[in-house]
Length: 239
Image (spheres, rainbow, N blue to C red):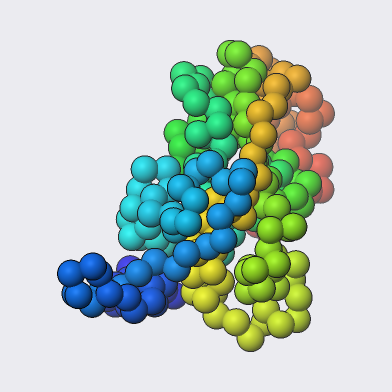
């Protein structure tokens, strides 16, 4: 956990404690209460008047630990992505052949890979560089899916989240853990989700023919031409 910005060195309990406010139970015992976000009609992920306690079956504590282990630090984008994955998966329901598509290269791919079986390596996650904070989970056989996105219209009561997402100058002086706390307080209420039908699966099912590059001898897809990209002048390294 060395080098982690939020949960390392025993700070996880302190962080979770910071999400709560003092309260008193009916029997007079002092307790810490989760913040209560304003309920929304469309928020079916968390009961009205209650703060979220789980993301994709993980407790918030376990989610934060897994995020640090996978992503390298506590991230507002991955935290928001967790609620988006959870919302889309619940909307989609049972999907034996789960695939995912994310519409940004930032943070959301890690949220999907952390919480679902879909990864870049197995080909069940496709990343679209559209710069939109949205994702879709779908069944590649039935093509039924659910798309989730951050709803900017719901950020009025969460100025820290709004400043972070809209990249306002005010966000520069705010620590990431403060934004994460605000996102955890808002939970599913910050997310919109709707069913969609895919036009086609995004995973390439066809075998890709390969050929040897005459310059370096390494094999590469034939569609790239005779020379591999590196030998054709696109190398990102020097020999």
